[in-house]
Image 1 (cartoon, rainbow, N blue to C red):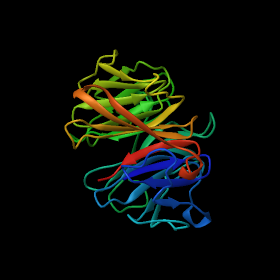
Image 2 (cartoon, rainbow, N blue to C red; image 1 turned 60 degrees about the vertical axis):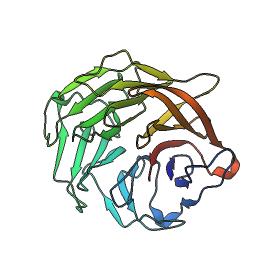
Image 3 (cartoon, rainbow, N blue to C red; image 1 turned 120 degrees about the horizontal axis):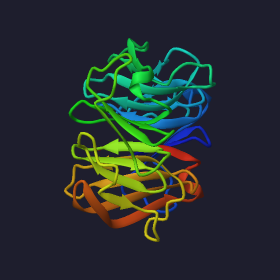
Length: 287
């Protein structure tokens, strides 16, 4: 299944992995009881609980695996301070990171706020001048435990060691091929960053600034404003899903090649009035 957050109508829509064209979602989480308010980043835990970063609401809301309709969240994680929540990532043991950015110039530093498994209040944060954080809009956890961060301002992508806290320097940083990153995803060997296109890098220390492959925009992948991205690497040919904010569409890409140097083998799109897509930002794939 594919989960998509819709900033425009404050909803999360869920599609079958085989959905195409003007296909209605299997489920749609929306309504006043959901507490969704400007949903952007998405993540799933090992039990398929859905975590939603709400930019406007300033909270992470958590829903059960079958949540549908006007469903109240099971939990709400509240980073301290008056900040936007822009992205979320969940670790293998159930701990959560939320990326925050101040709502005003005097609202505090951007930070990566940590919540222990099952906790609704944070226990520590990564923040401070040594972190290099500017406006963290994308988070991904590498299977090896590193926390990968995409900053919208300057296009800097950084990796923090497992257990990093406080005003700590990243393990590595590099400037991606776009000066304004919008989303990030990774598998064991591939790092994906979105801008005008989807830029692929090896998960190295650090990756080269020049991507090893680029997907779109092109006639076969007509991206207008790529935002969130996800990769399903369980198959030999990984599937990449990317939300197109401006086109109100979700592209599903079957790749070919040897990771991380992947090319486009086939692309399809979910779009149309029946889909419920409206300013899609976040995307995550589930088994």
